[in-house]
Length: 306
Image 1: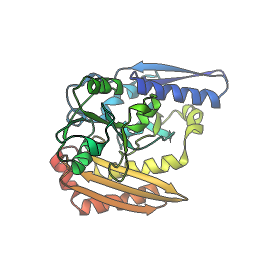
Image 2: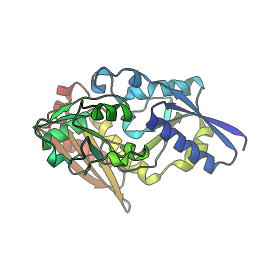
Image 3: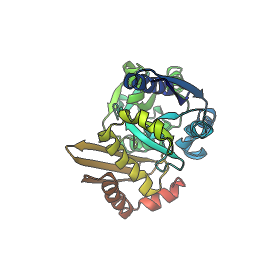
């Protein structure tokens, strides 16, 4: 094979790790394929003054990468699936989802203390309304505040004393060889992950059949089914991926087990729903119906995130 594939990627250390990982996977599957990276800074990387929920959501991390696909400067873009909006617009496709790592949220503290040992009133940094709300439900005494920037930037703010602890994705810390920074894993029963958390996705143009053929071996049908169910919850509620919504599915045999939680930012109200089945869209629809029956639409309207 004498062919070249260009990956559009953000330039944060984690995004580059993900792109290089996919590069290595593609080169393993296709002898002679040349894979290059096109590093870019996105609007989400540049706009750090406000929480993402106030400036357009996590979709700000992918728009410049998508433009590179349209312009022909890149063939594919690699994303953390939790950052991809639930509704992908034309002319884009997401034919590959896989490589799911630990889905749990992680507590990182300056002194290694776990959540039970953190003092009342401690300052906790998190960029996620989902994490913030579920933590507040458990520990309403804590001062949970927004934080932006890549993983290294956030850890720097922790180490310099701006925060007493951080909430981060354990998958990202593991991929960056920072697992030793994790003081405690928050189990999914206490902090339900975001839709797609821990999984990677590869985006391309829907009409790029040759590109889709090259990346097809990287798709994981089981992970794809789980993430699809999770994303259909967000889509069914019309919720932006920055909303305080968690959705997590596991595949046991041929059966999907899906659960979701939608919370008020202060954690005073948590709506929960579960469903099982074999078809991602149908299982998600059952969860969405249960959440709507509990008042999910009204809750989202108060957030102005729907």
